[in-house]
Amino acid sequence: SPLYDASQTTTTLPDAVALKTPFSRSQYSAAFPRSLHGHFKSVLHRQAMVTVRNKVFVMTRVFSAVITSVILGSVWYQLPKEKGFEKLGMLLFSILHISFSNFSELTFSVEQKYVAYKQLDMKMFPALTYMAAWGIVHLPIAIVETAIFSLVLYPMVGLVLTAGNWIFFYFNLLLANIAMASF
Image (cartoon, rainbow, N blue to C red; front, side, top):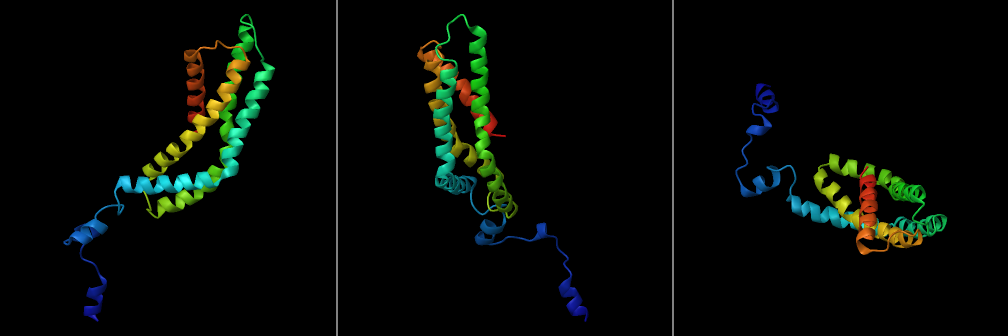
């Protein structure tokens, strides 16, 4: 029937639909129903819970920082000032170790990747909030791991024991840790 055919065809595009009531504007006019801040808070809470519940991951990172720093410190124990190339090798190996210590996070990240893809495809939250929440949750882990590693290693290898030099050493290791974790 012509009346049925007319009811099945659309003459207006989705952009032309008027959202007249406050409820319809709040529900359907934005890509996400809540504010960016609201999404960020909920995703941050979720990411913190996922990370805290994975005690094996967190404890492995801390334990490996202690063990590895003691081993490396014993290899280069109290190097004299004349051994510049050996100290340079120790610094290079320290940065490489702290960078590649993020490989323990690889299986955890691959596992979470598919969950994040599914939730992002369903428009549960903006991608920006997920990335920011992930960075903020993993920052304390990187800070603690790098602090433990550098506090044990730095005095063992005979580097200059001043606060400014240690902070410089720590800051460089922390930046390497964060940079490699972001990949």
